[in-house]
Image (cartoon, rainbow, N blue to C red; front, side, top):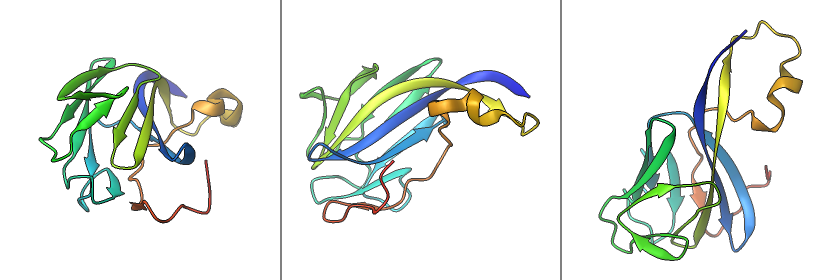
Length: 141
């Protein structure tokens, strides 16, 4: 059984144009930084502990820099706040985070044909693993 669709923020993490990982978030606030409590933790000296957050406001996503030391850039422009659109690229440290939004319905497990209905948009809410600039996960998504 499917319920009402909800917005999903998709972040594709790239290092030197190479896709490292892709994460989907359905929570209202996604915190990005070096801190262990960050939803997306990026380990690089150019990234602040609490670098930026992305807030869901209705169906849109708003990036807010958390007074980071080196700033947050969207599409090569330094920003303090920015309404994100599909295709935007957030640059932070050595990483480029490619943005897209999707809407996904909640699934309760009652439909055996779920794989064909979800297709490529099945993005779980996850806590991102610790990413390091000098190591690349062995499994790419």
